[in-house]
Image 1: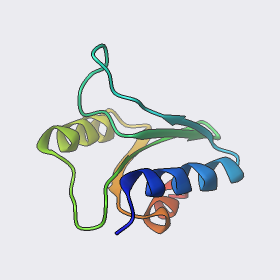
Image 2: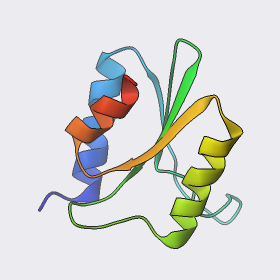
Image 3: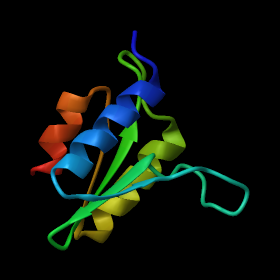
Length: 92
């Protein structure tokens, strides 16, 4: 099973190669908990992606944060378990 870090690195490489501005979010004591792992921006569109290993799901708090982002509008917020899944959301 691939590590979450390996999946994240693959998604970041893909997005950068397609011209996205990319940010890997590193949690810390001054950050709101549950924020998705990565933010991608291109052509005025923002995509937040939470990365999980295959077979794993986001925590309840991560699901709440994804729903908050979706409700605000103007951004895509999803969770994925592979580079292929992320690619589909980057091009929605």
